[in-house]
Image (cartoon, rainbow, N blue to C red; front, side, top):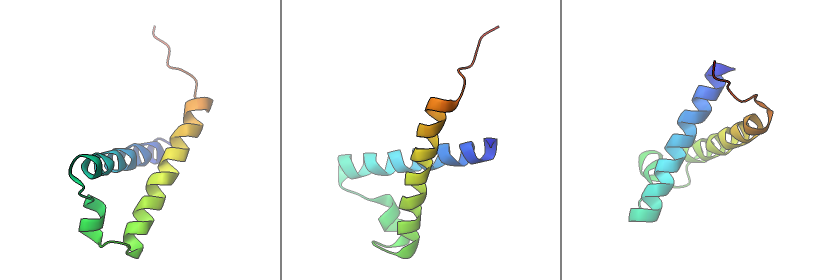
Length: 68
């Protein structure tokens, strides 16, 4: 599960940076790298969405870390 969570976090960072670029500079890095509307671009967007769902579920199901 830790590997899945790590992948989810990386995908969320990529998605967040991409949206930041879109908002600030009207530049979509994912489209630029993989082609606008290409199958790979759509797969990346789906994976980012699934990563967000994964983290939403984890937000409500994981126990908070305790300090000793």
